[in-house]
Image 1 (cartoon, chains in turn red, cyan):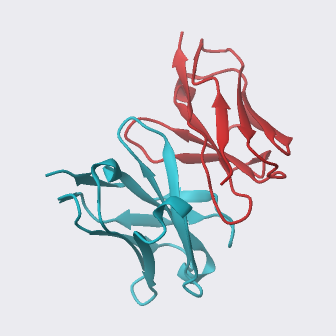
Image 2 (cartoon, helix red, strand yellow):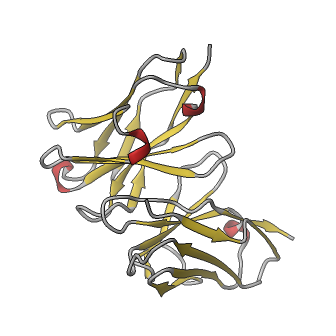
Length: 107
Length: 120
């Protein structure tokens, strides 16, 4: 099974900051990577798919990059609504493993 | 608009089974697949498996092989996830989620979640 490792587990930032979350796959997944945002008590929300494609309606301050085994999610000009937990997910082949999550909290 | 509406919370004894439903609306039901994802209290997301609505093909996470079955009823636009031999560690919120692209396991619409509690 492909394992996904996110870092950091928690990230403290202020409104207006730029933050970067890293996701590493245990084997190459080409560009088959998605990012989700989840708030307490809610279902996850798709932000980015195929490494860098922005889901419809998602603000352009969210961006993704990477390939192979190393990927990043960057949020620029952090807004109050962005404080949440973020998950990467690989969907290479016939599985859909998630990373363990990164909580972005208010500094 | 696309909606996935799940059945209500369940409580089961260890060793029992549970069947959760997910009713889809707002899109052509056979045009996509549905996955199930769970989240234990305070924990991350775990992908459980996927079913093709078009032909009923399934693909399950290796660790759950033999304990989970996903089925679909195209007459009612409903997908079911049954889990057997429940253990306390199966306590979680279970989500159904629609594949954004047929055959790909990333998800653009999610159900509201169903809490399954396994406790004696």
